Amino acid sequence: MIAPDILLRYKATLKSFSKDRVIFNELDTPQFYFQIKTGKVKMYNITEDGKEFVQGFFEDGKSFGEPPLFVDSKYPASAAAMDNTEVYILPKTIFLDLLKENPEIHLNITKLLCERMVYKATIIKEVSIYPPEHRILTLLNYLKTASNTDKKSLYEVTLTRQQLSELTGLRVETVIRSVKKLEKSNKLSISERKIYL
Image 1: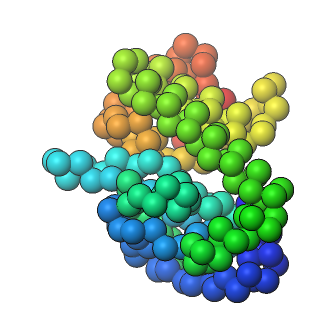
Image 2: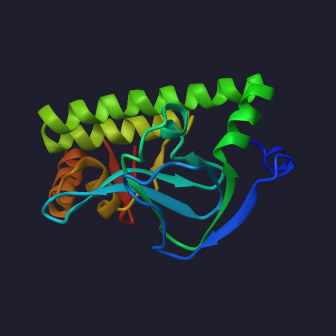
């Protein structure tokens, strides 16, 4: 996202988070820009019945939690490390200065936020009106496109069945059944428990 040398030039700090440690909570006031150096982070909400609904997974080099920095709103979800994770942290005011002084980075952040908006609009539609197989296939196609994998190339899905469940709002058992149905209809393939599209 933003080159580490630029983050360091703007005095970003590097902080370590152990597995399952919360980085920020839903409804916290945003004060920092976060970018992962190594590790994995999930953004999630907890439903009234205690179920976790994952908004997204973020890995090495990816940023997360930026939208509230621009609109002075609270975080709409919580973020937690999924394994031992190192994160660059830059105070909000310095992050906004960095964007003002580097228009190309500002443009890249804007593009990223727009891509996430398209993803969220797609997933909201899928979750609300389509059957499980369609939801899963739409998510997998989105992930393949976002990975810049050639359409004709085989794409390996790196998410577990549990993670697919969390991203689609489906039960794990439903994901497992639906993936098998999609395999039978030749819309994806499974080899050694890995999903390919």
